[in-house]
Length: 115
Image (cartoon, rainbow, N blue to C red; front, side, top):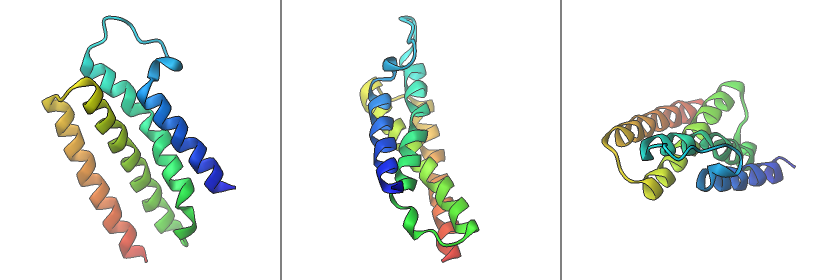
């Protein structure tokens, strides 16, 4: 049941990341940088979907917390990559991307130490 919910969240996250105007108003004067940030917000759904799909591997509270943080970070990274590909590359967005990669590595290390 959780896997089905995970797949639904993952698909919904991808759809809203690609087309955020389906659920929110996007003004004409929005910059490409701001559009990427609107897309990144939907990365949370992607991350929750990833967590729902792979939740069977979590066996303790600490591991669950680190898996949750890693999945959310991965979802945000995926959404940011989609935004960068659709709206263009900006130095500040690439800086955020690098920070998120470091966070993902950090959470993944913490998760693996719980195993």
